[in-house]
Image (cartoon, rainbow, N blue to C red; front, side):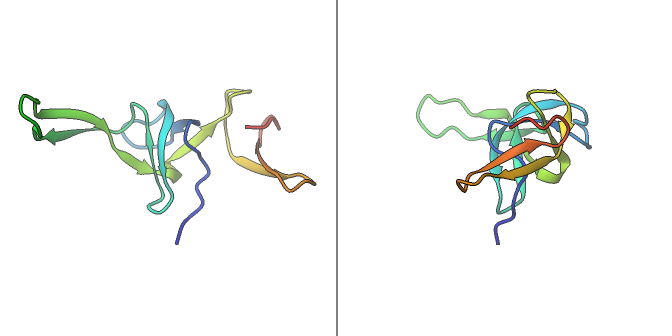
Length: 106
């Protein structure tokens, strides 16, 4: 069952809790099946990488780890505040995401 996630790839979000609480970042990837997102520069984890080709270096690489989508909140690009997402349905059948605080389209 695919869950709906309130953020999309490219959105700017702020982390609500955890070790990176209060940090802003851009959403790089969304996984609705798991309910998780990957945010640029947030939840950095160390990955051990094995060299695959001749001459390629292995070692420990820092990479972004996934975190639950409920732990992040969208930042409105117009008013700059953290906000919830509202939807507006137009007569021609199109749907648009709206900022709850300022009313602008996201």
